[in-house]
Length: 102
Image (cartoon, rainbow, N blue to C red; front, side, top):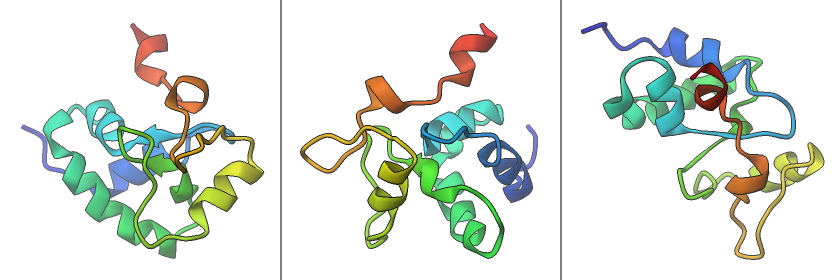
């Protein structure tokens, strides 16, 4: 099995289009390591030091990163659809590259 790489995470994150979001699990799956979503979350902590759209990465249920109060505002400014419960509407705003590849 390939070794987990934070750089591979960053390479995927930089391609998430404006107005769309991806989940930690989807990024792990794109890397060919679907069981490593927690590793993706840890790697994303380093994304703040880079020019990456890290705010476009959310939990599988559309939940936002705890404690990151600006994330919702940043997503809404890009046109991401939010539900009344404060989560991303994944049906309307999810980036689905795996579906287009298949």
